[in-house]
Amino acid sequence: MRLSGKCGVLHMNEVSNEFLDRVSSLIEEAKKNVKTAVNIAMVYTYFEIGRMIIEEEQNGDNRAEYGKYIIRNLSSFLTERYGKGYSVDNLKLMRRFYTIYKTDSIGETVFPQFKNYPVTATGRKFYLSWSHYLKLMRITNIEERHFYEIESVKNDWSLSELKRQYYSSLYERLALSKNKDEVMLLSQKGQIIEKPADAIKDPYVLEFLQLPELPVYSETELENKIIDHLQQFLLGLGKGYTFVGRQVRLTFDEEHFKVDLVFFNRILKCFVLIDLKIGELKHQDIGQMQMYVNYYDRKVKLEDENNTIGIILCKDKKQSIVEMTLPENNNQIFASKFQTVLPSKEELQNILNEE
Image 1 (cartoon, one colour):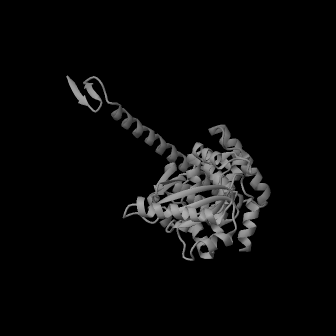
Image 2 (tube, helix red, strand yellow; image 1 turned 120 degrees about the vertical axis):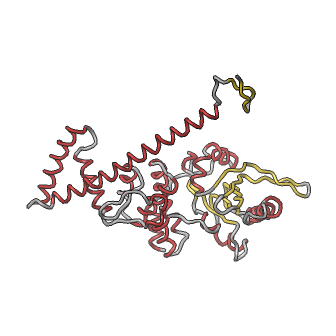
Image 3 (cartoon, one colour; image 1 turned 90 degrees about the horizontal axis):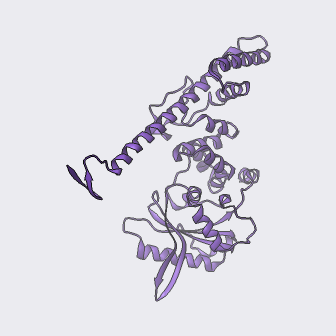
């Protein structure tokens, strides 16, 4: 007996690749869920171990000395019974984990999809791996720590991506463009994108391109590097971006123009055009982007899509030229600097504190 399939004739003793792939995907997803569940369970366990250590320490007369005695003996006992993972240093980290998070909380409404997660006796839920929390514990600013925890969960950041976003000062770069109330919302709900300006960063950090800070490369080389590292560039842009094309040609009145990079943002429901400028931004560059944006709004976007956004990434800019070239109510064209080396967190923090 033979069955007809999409790619021709399928014998009864054959199985379609599509079916095999679907079963395989189901198993892979199950493995991922099991791994996630185990990781989360260990985080709750370490929190409880930290609590028990502190409560036991409080039973001793000389708490500091008794605390050292407890941890040394507990380490020996757990290592003999369960193997690696329970060194003195690790137990100290568990104690610190409890100390930091026992009075810490993130609003329940931030992650409604995790409403069935267990809750500690202090009312805390954990959503990330132990490795993530080891990194988060090193962030002393509680608002900043909350922001990175929320973004890690919402965007499914790996530990390496969390570190990259932290060392590229994402929190400070977003906070610099916001008022006091909006900065507080970063620590309560993470980055919220409701209007074009919410999706813009200044500067954009492109250290993953591995280009020197000095402008010894061309705009074409910069574009090629971005395409080579497109996934990381999309992460750097933020939420909701999908890649449409590079050097996209526009033609009118028998003249041809090309937009360096075109994206679509699913959250804002609009096209995002990016032009790359190695030198200092000039008013002609802004006028050119205005033309590109007008073309997309009039010729390309659909009726149910929102107005196009244009971003000019440049090495340097004079804000006065940007403001005088664009209309006062501008909400479509933005000029942002880009850096090819990680900025100094201390410098950005100082600027943020001053503001």
